[in-house]
Length: 469
Image 1 (cartoon, rainbow, N blue to C red):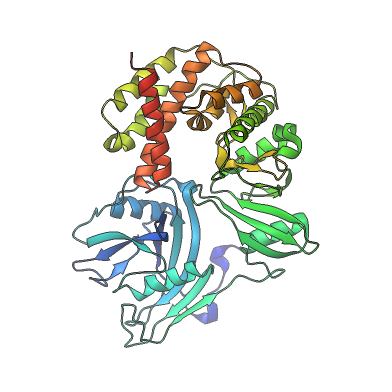
Image 2 (tube, rainbow, N blue to C red):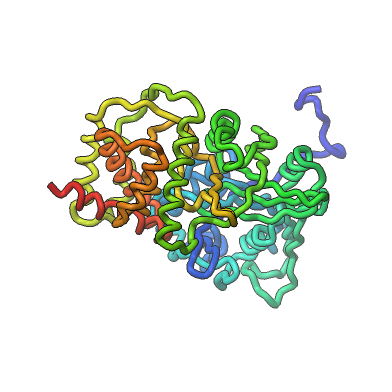
């Protein structure tokens, strides 16, 4: 039977509802998570009330395309489809009229550009607000969707009654009915991920989210009925999933117990389960001088082992360094100091003139944040979603920030790595550090992440001193 063969339900026309999309643009503020809201203005529904950036589907587009378009049209930010994740779905009926609608809410934690009012005839204000301190007055429909999102519920029903206000009002009966996902093993995880995890490790009793907000991927620490512990990760995009799975299968095994082991992977769900590692994060750990030197030596050994985890290859054809740098400079220019752009462009020209390197398996984000320190002083490396074939020096870029003013740490790392850098590699490291710095300044400045932006500025200051001549 084809779709055209299906008879009308109950002898009448099918029930149809409008569909709209809502953007939950999220960042980490001084006191916790914040979302971007705009105040409606002019001859529009709910004028004067705060609301998420939102809109209706255009003919022929899907909901992800729609929320990306609405974000660009209303706020000016650009969003990659792989950075769009489902937040909640709301079935809503307004207090006037008899129809209902479906609202699909999407969370986005990575974007480019600074949000601003793009449609002044429809919006007269825009700002960041804490998730636990939403402004008043606010559209009740939008507030209901955010309530479901804050509660971690996949869906909700919000059927208002005639006479209810359009704005959210605490004194009015709450019309929001939150709908949890089906419980499996008592673990609060999205249904598809719970099913995948339990197929991999058996019934689970607890799941605790331990996601790092910057990445957009989500991570849970899961506990089995026998007390075993694993990590479940859902990647924010297919590219990151494919990179991490490939790394775990091809070159991470060379690290042995110093890295997690892949237990299971699900391409459709973009998820993996990996074994847990002992240790505390190296990031933020206070170390004495001798410990710093020893740890840098061990980091060198880790990098050397990883880079030798599979045979080196010839690099594939890629975009020119100048094109890559110009892309990041477009976003970073307002935040650069005098001379920064000149330095970076000069290093891009230098990079173009270097001999082609061989490429090796790399971590892609080799820094203290992705290293654990065990009680007996050993190191463990994790998070391989950016792992790919690349230059060996690319894995030294972010770690080199810890070497500033500490030649002893740089020497310890290279001693552990097993060899010094060639003159061409020294230049390549400086060039790649400059490119990463510009990217970090652009991201940190537009996402209110001062740590990343400051690291980029430190790098450029160091490179200015090294290349002043």
